[in-house]
Amino acid sequence: MNLNYLDFEQPIAELEEKIDALESIKDDADIAKEMDSLKLKSELLTKKIFSSLSDWQISQLARHPQRLYTLDYIDSIFDEFTELCGDRAFANDKSLIGGIAKIDELTFMFIGQQKGRSTKEKIYHNFGMTRPEGYRKALRLMKLAEKFSLPVITFIDTPGAYPGIGAEERGQSEAIARNLFEMSTLKTPILSVVIGEGGSGGALAIGLSDVMMMFEYSIYSVISPEGCASILYKDASKAPIAAESLKLTSKHLKKHKLIEKVIPEPLGGIHRDPDTASMFLRKALVKELKNLLEVPIDKLIEDRHEKLLGFGKFSE
Image (cartoon, rainbow, N blue to C red; front, side, top):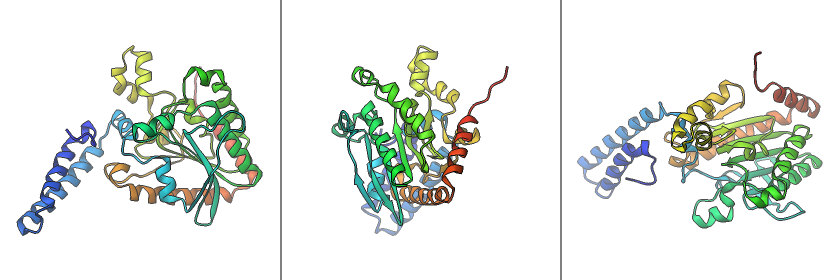
């Protein structure tokens, strides 16, 4: 079993291994023909599998260990980036990266959550779970952006806000609520992108925006499928059932007008073709940011309020 492939990707992995095995002897005409046949078969199989993914399988893709993280995108799509650290009150939260960035002629304030890939990196970035000082750092940078008329771009990728005792003692819920309050009236454009996993208030605290975008195989929900299954069914193994009920994929969220745009992913997901995924993201950021910059600030905030007040439906 290839650990770089998810369970439902194993048939693809088997074909890829055969192709790799033939790679060293591809000079033979018959071998080269066999390789072309296997590559075509692999592509067709990938299209078939990815055309009918369940919500749980998409949740697994959103957490894929080889999926690009915030620092990967900073390196690949930003022309310039200057990091700004600390909340000026307690500490610098390493789970949240922030600073001034530039793409082409567009300069903006960037804020993004970073999970980490190796064990050492995961611990350093606290698995992408932000503490109160991280959200206060984000707010400091957003207010700085407002002062200097810079738009704000945020990348969301977290299982949720850090639930530790220290975080609660330092006001985790207040920090998240303060961000929501301030972002609702921030006098500068805000553009958010769910690049992987958008979990609970930990994601929403940097996701109250004028335009919310999601990668095709990312997720955005009030709770994780495992957490939902543990509460509703008292059994975390029923996460696949919970995932279907949560409607946490980009397809469902776009249908219900909770997000504005879905960014397509390369065949097989971002981890299969990082360069193409980065190109798609860069183009989407430039296009949407230019559109937002053309809207007068007063109209932008008015539209933001209407968007927020329009969320949710109920009947008596």
